[in-house]
Image (spheres, rainbow, N blue to C red):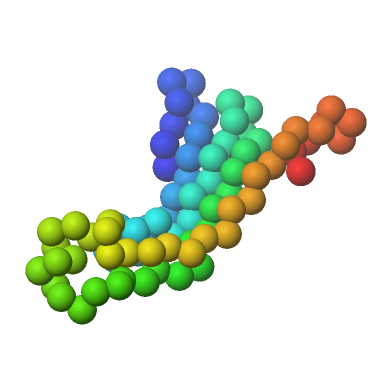
Length: 79
């Protein structure tokens, strides 16, 4: 979790054993969720370990589900 100067949560993340994101949530200053991202799959596109260690981002692809929230004045909440 990351906090702002007032102690409010601004991000909440979960990672796997290789420090890849599994979930990531952003919050506004009053605690309403702004964005929610969930990783569906992680795929490594090389079998050569040396290539992967030189540039892991070049050979890794992520599939994610991203949901963005908008504030509604009528409902007085994010949807």
